[in-house]
Image 1 (cartoon, rainbow, N blue to C red):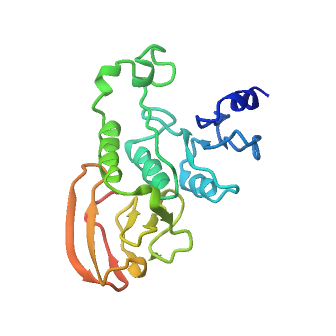
Image 2: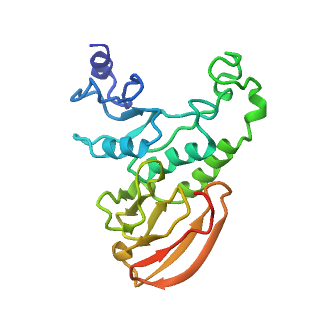
Length: 231
């Protein structure tokens, strides 16, 4: 009733809910006309499963992270923080939020949520730096045109599953393919969705932001192994 009352006099702003862990905004609120965007709240180590499920919900709503694993909480290491960010944006998410304890409460809770209390010492943490690289990469791309490769028609081999799952997408304008590979291994890419006659392969290091160019290739299926030892 409260949400419906607000919507009756304000039709401008998007409305959603912030639910309990391991749920979406649509959990318990499905079909509400005022619910315009779908928040996802999960601490799972396989958040790609949740992202793809949110992307495939009907009726279609943009899905974004209400809350996911934060730096220094729930056993998350910096690789976990990168995984959930890249998994999300390449699985149809509308964006990403990053949190770091003790920054978000300026150490107010004095170690209750994590063992760290000096928030100033974490301003340039590995997690924060990784998110800077993440933003730089996707702010220069039309990520809202991404279509998740759920049927493995683009990455045809090497996808794996669980915490090593490689998520892949292509753009609706057929100009690019983006894949996130959490471990170093060979993957096979079929660039048939690209409209040009050749493809240019670039390797982006999520930890450092460094870019390595490969040779331009004829548009045909190819197998490649990223040069970095982790993601």
